[in-house]
Length: 149
Image 1: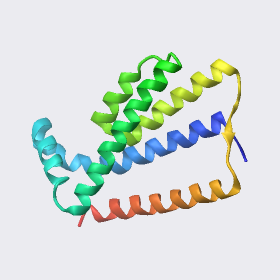
Image 2 (image 1 turned 135 degrees about the horizontal axis):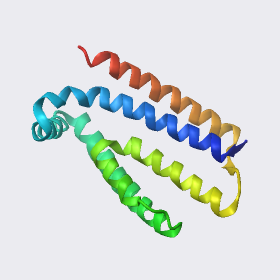
Image 3 (image 1 turned 90 degrees about the vertical axis):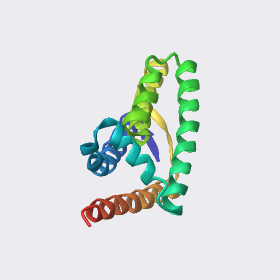
Image 4 (image 1 turned 90 degrees about the horizontal axis):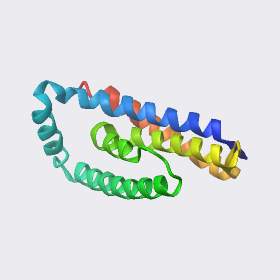
């Protein structure tokens, strides 16, 4: 299945928005502590148990890898503002900033080669991504419904 750049950008945007909503629906619970207090408590809470520590380490090193790749890709494509995505990733959330970077990248690539095609995915790829999407959305809704408990 051929994927257009426009469809891919919409998918990236949806991923970023759902991520932003899912993360910040939880993050706002810290804001009453102020900037410093909320950051201290947030990072203390990431040490709460083996699962939170594992996920935090996983996300931190995935973030580092993504940042290195974003900076290299931005330089390769002469993209401006790469560090904005890095700072947004650290301040707002990499799962929202990275899709924004990818949308910017797709626009630069389209401008450079005039192509409207982002690439192709097999039926297995589409099925796998759809399954992952359903699972991640289900987990996000479960997490949001449990935050009040």
